[in-house]
Structure formats: C-alpha cells, structure tokens
Length: 191
Image (cartoon, rainbow, N blue to C red; front, side, top):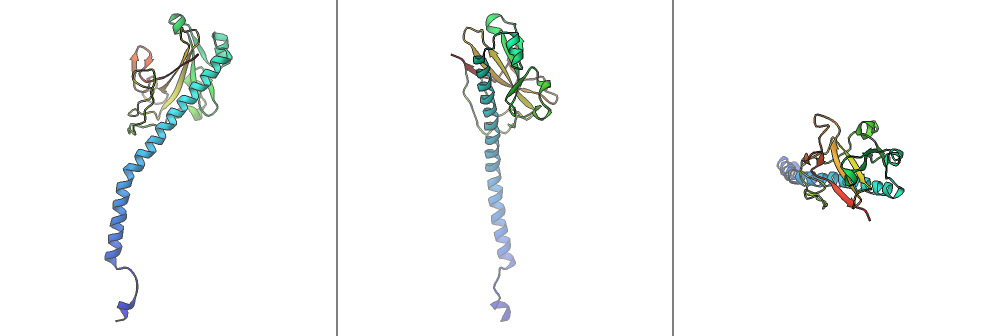
C-alpha cells in the first residue's frame, strides 16, 4: 500500500518518453543540416557580392593599366586584346583587400569557402549560363578571385571561386567551361 502512494514515473514511462525524444531528434537532424548548409551557401554568395562591390569601387577609382592595378593590390593581364585586358586578384573578405596572387593572402584567409557538397538548393542568377554558384560543389578549400575588365566594350567584373588548398589547388570550383575560364562565375556589368 505504501508503494502505491509514491508519486513518480515508472521505468516503462521513462523509456517511452526517451523513445519519443529520440524519434524527434532523428527527424530534426536532416532539417538542421539542410538549414546549416543554406547558411554556408549564403555566406559564400555574400562574399562573392562583397568582392564584386569592392572591385566595382576600384573600377570607379580608375583601374585602367598595370600601375593602377598594382596600386590596388592586383595583377594586370594584357592578353586577349581590349576585351580581354583585365586587373585580377584574390580577395580577402576579412580586410576587403585584393592580393596579386592567392599565395599572398594572409594565412587566415588561405581558404574561407563554407559550402559543402550537400545541396541546400541555394542559387544565384548570373549572366553565366551555368550560374554563379553550384550548390553541389565543395567550396571549403576555396577563395574568391576577381577580374575587372575596364577596357572591354562592356566594362564588367567577374567573380569566381578557385581552390587554394589541397590536391585541387589549381582548379576552379566546378571546373572550367573553356580554357582558363571558370564554369561558375558572377558577372556584373558596369555602366
């Protein structure tokens, strides 16, 4: 009689509650992983936009030759005639600066991409037929590169990701669509 007056849970009730909590956790993990990947992909796209805005700002400051590109921390390429001549460099999102090569980036910025091969469905429209960002590609070892085409018939800025660490160090994320042209890139026309 004394045992029946005690209040509390039985072992069976505790096991049922634990099973219900376990099922809820198992159901929610894929949802949280997808939301986390969306955040990673959004981060990468935000860096691309940030780099594009910084490059456009440099364009309006007057990048038009090797000297002005060098002052901005960028390299200058005269290949491809008037439409192919460009200033280019690696972007450091922590400082907002450009560097002539990826090797010159500060150690803390040697890789800053966040997106993994998990597809969260993030897309960004671009003038590139393949798009600016491929959500099924791995960006974790990559950095953003920028090219400014100030002398082109239609001046523009191209922004894209290139691997900077590991066995794919010299490959664009997602590969090439043409010789030395990244498959995925963001193009911003100026004027």
